[in-house]
Image (cartoon, rainbow, N blue to C red; front, side, top):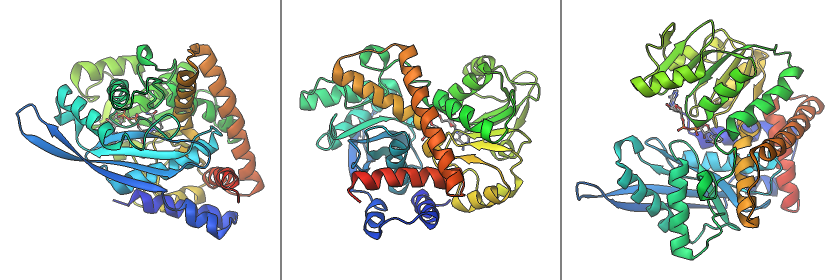
Length: 407
Ligand code: NAD
């Protein structure tokens, strides 16, 4: 599998071929300000102590405190976290929110842990990193396999260690523990707002057929929002595989099916596909919403979608990007498409610092205003620079970060 950090650096090289930046700035933005690895000992339910490896990478804070989620996954390693931290720095600049970029993780399969073990691991991550975290320094959030409940344990542990009761050090918390209205759905909904601006530029029709890879926070919420807005979700998948239903999936019914059966397979009226087959289905819009490196040189030529919205981080390798670009398939890059999550996380941080609680309608209106505006900025940059949307988004982000760094 391709090293995601190498992929991120190839994306950077491609963007700066289109627009030059000062060498000294590029040398700084290509490397994280700081990367931390910690060991987290956890006393397991059987009495044995297991040691897990945890990470925090603080990429760049020129525009504000480091911001970025924490991933729990057995494949997570320092290179993945470094790539994700770099993308976060660009993403916050794309959304024009006052945050820098960071990311965290633990190499663990959380499905093998009991709830007590998961809580001990999460509190251990905070104990290992409390010195570098804080509302004005570094503000983590959920990512793959981390939940609002995990954020509330982390917030509590941070308050116990530091006495900081603002709750603004972690976002994505439960509503009754300092969370923001709308945070759960923010990445999927924000993805829809971005899509709705750009699809008109690329003639994606109303009611188009949509395929979604991933059925977690992002994929599940995106499916609901797209369906509610009249789009036909014809296929969805989770880590075990996918289902296709040409006349459209009732997303709520599929959710209930998964809850009852533990799998999407067997959903009434559907046929089963592998995750790789799902990506190659005939459709108008393909939404990768699971993990990185899903569309590579091996399958890019077989992609039949007419438009791709990257809600996962890094789902397309750079070589595959070149192929899709040559095939005239527009790709809305992760750093724009999924920036709704960090935008509402920033709203949560702001509410915590001010002691406010905004209504859901206010949150969605503010989110839409930001994403509508920044989607247009990036689209116009792509036209002016005669390049694809990813390179345009990189250029806009790099310009903003460079300015904040005094270049
Ligand atoms: P999640 O843990 O809630 O869900 C992940 C989903 O992907 C699950 O349905 C899982 O079964 C599925 N999956 C895992 N491996 C897969 C595979 N090989 N093929 C197909 N499906 C697979 O995670 P999430 O929060 O929904 O995050 C998904 C992606 O979106 C990640 O790339 C994450 O970094 C990105 N993202 C998340 C947020 C957020 O607010 N949660 C914000 C921005 C970006």
